[in-house]
Length: 198
Image (cartoon, rainbow, N blue to C red; front, side):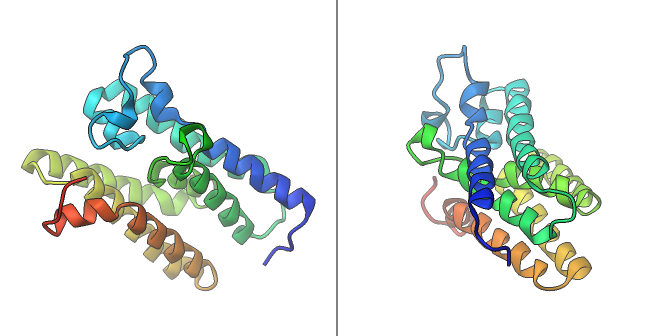
């Protein structure tokens, strides 16, 4: 485990700050629509997609890009991969608890995917493929919570592939991130289980 130092604390703060940039809100500029009060109220890709496809692409690119940028900028050559995970998680936490949104935010899937794209591109692409397939199938058959089903299924596949490829302790990091994703999607899970909608 990396030792905490002023330099490491600064890098973590940079990752959190990058992650906190609310691209979902920014992608809606000029519409007069507050994405935190539209649809599900979640400031993320799936909710922006309810309003506009091209604006959702702007949101997705920004959210994934900030995760990638955080790890790219802060993980130095020769440092352990686990430190890259920590920087990625810091960006996800910034996204989910953004000071720009009163320490509220999105669910972190796209930002986490961007961070993992920097760390494990070969592992991430099959997960992106699964996400796309499930979104298309879910759209065709009008699945309830199809965005969540696609996102969470891709996250599960990523955690399993990391566990198979990397072993421990990296596998623990993958499953910890998966648990955070599940917690952030608890209302979506309640919907699928027949509870109250978000």
